[in-house]
Length: 331
Image (tube, rainbow, N blue to C red; front, side, top):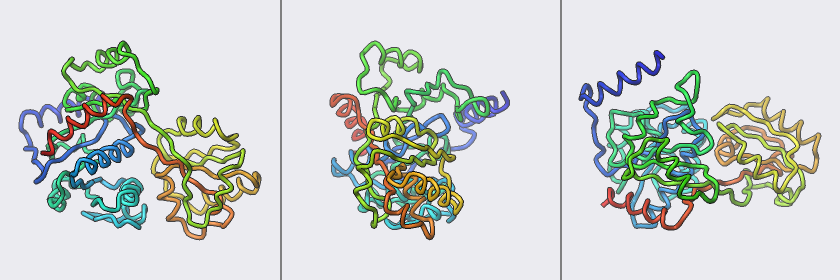
């Protein structure tokens, strides 16, 4: 109750102009949520980057750099360390070497440093009220509806569900491959969005395994067994996906953004010894942190792969509508 009251007072004061919100020097697009992790922000930021570059825009990414060691504004190098810059910024810097990726807790200062960009994508900044983006996108997990959730610490909500109406676009993520019109309208009603409010639906798609280390042996991908190790908010979708091709013998689930330790590496080595033919599978975010580990045994390096994940709209028409909504603010 106290947390919810504080949120309401804070939002009321900002709406009444208690603190002035500033704008970035170039068009900016915020991708955020109202829950604690697990809505697929990183795949959707990457989807947005691909969309912008395909339409001849020059995007940059500004992230907080959660749990990073370095402070202040930092540009993330393509071979950067997740320990220094954060796993998600390092992942995007590796995947998009021609795009500037930076981290700064002070988003206003960070945007000033990135003024050479054509458009700035703000990763996880919906609660950052000092900066008013040109467009805000809020993600909602299909499998964890916000209208059934509760505020922290009793639930996963870190913001009021009513704040969804403040978003310019709402995207329901992790959907099945097909949703009929009736279910789409049911979501609109339960989220209390007007008929005119842009509402889109996306799904997540996994792609072929990629080695975490360059000396990996690709033959392990064809094993019938795998060991899954993750440090993300939810790994159920990935585990179900792997179960179609592998017998998942063991699943090591660690906290979100977990920094791997020597003890974790010893646990992986022990699991490998007990299942000599199994491959090791992890997520793309975890791969950034595992690369930071020192003295990883060859037995792990040879069989450790990550499964890339991409966000995609359910229909081409929906993707086109979203594209036009994005391009309208970047002209």
